Length: 104
Image (cartoon, rainbow, N blue to C red; front, side, top):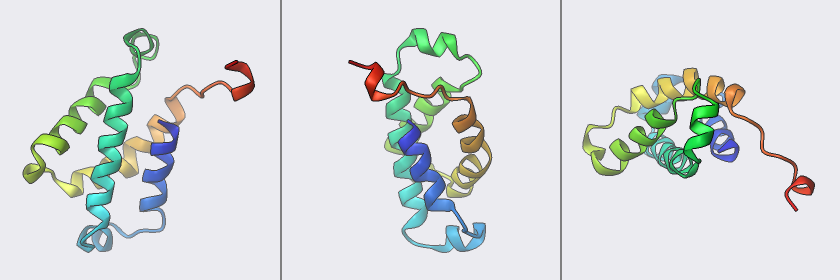
């Protein structure tokens, strides 16, 4: 999930909202990153969801579903807001994965 959040941040970095939204490809790329984020949230165990109730796990999963299945109603301006307001908060709240040396 940290990788997807970094990709979202890189995509919007140094971007003006109106110029970003006027671009033909960037808003669609942002939507794809949110699909990836929702997929990752779905794969997180429900025990982790319970351990970190301040993280909007279900909302991430729901956003993925909306983008993937109801694409024509996706509001790219709203995705911009989520990326600029909520992604930094999520990045700070998300637990850090253990270093590889602790996994094996």
